[in-house]
Length: 352
Ligand code: GLU
Image 1 (cartoon, rainbow, N blue to C red):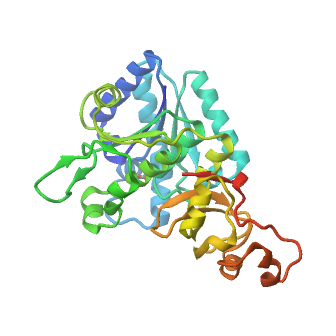
Image 2: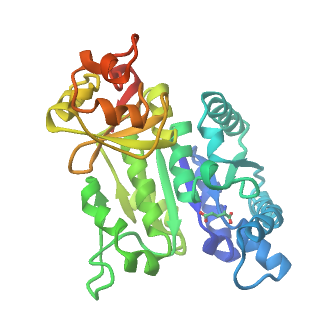
């Protein structure tokens, strides 16, 4: 089984806890499991190294991360070295997953390392990653990497046992399984939730990305000893599951590529897409975001649920002009002679 393991800064800064996790990884590797680690902690360790306290500007954080990344790798090298295992460092930006070529190279490099019995340790290349080419955080990075390498599971370790129902009240009941995006998407909006859990929002988003391709994602408590075995064999944590099956290479690329906007469609078009038909302008009711021809976009129904991801044949401003129109009217409305009848062709689309 190939497992992506996401480890957050709080865990990295606690060497005892990290060391327990590394020892469990090594034990599981001996049993035949394969691991890719996505680890944060570069900024945190950089702060420690330079005694930098308090607020840091973006460029200060980038500088701290480049100091801390060395510390981070030294730490992993030492901890895995205790078990005779080697580690490799891979620093990526979203751009590296956003083109077919680098997507392939990243996948091949990781697979080669796994064959060599080396543990790949990924982090965002903070020193160069700003805005457009940023994942935002390592939760999203770990979900996208899991898609790139076709991991069987993504385990996101944090400092709580998973997602709780009625968060913020005294009734704290753990949600064991999320199989419906709606169930927990209300958490994505609550500010209180965001503040009190420090990043549960992006963990949920990572869970949703995994659901798109049917990779099981589990959010669990990295501070509990033996957590990896408890996740794998005893059902610990909150699990995101879906009926979706792992998709083809092209489909996974669509899931991983950055979405530049959303095309909102009516009920008829939504049904047609689910029945593997192309998206025509007549079924489009709205466009969100600004995108160009060839960009990857979400196709959503009027309730706001994403139903597919696809490559658009028209820009957002063109779609605004042709939405609700028949395909035969496209040429006249846009003043062009050669045009495609489909806004998103079914061959360039993946259902999610
Ligand atoms: N790349 C950042 C670091 O290593 C962390 C980003 C995150 O925590 O999601 O410090």
